[in-house]
Image (cartoon, rainbow, N blue to C red; front, top):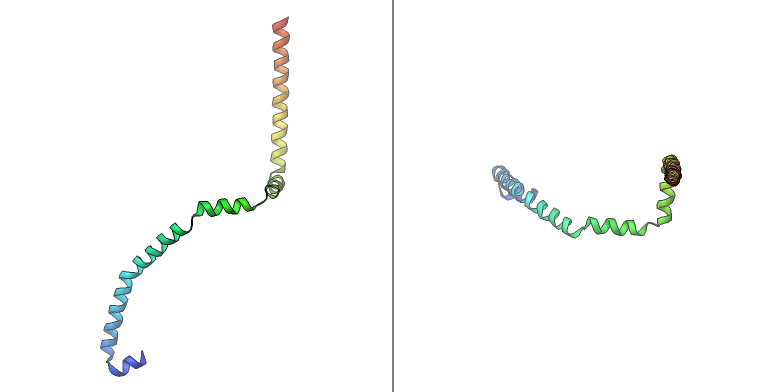
Length: 100
């Protein structure tokens, strides 16, 4: 503040700085709070995520899923086949014993 310093003393400049800093300390949280609340209302995250997910082709998601979970899918398919076989054998056994 060279121009202001030419007309007023150092004590006055220091006093003005203290007042200015005190005002900023009071106003800054209010300004930031208002900014954040406006940001939250303007930026609808749910809508943004839904739009971004809608833009991703399903085929890409399927390929990534299969790539990352190939072994787990094989295990799940094996377990499913085994459970199906056991249910089939149990059903045949029940029918055989019920008719016999």
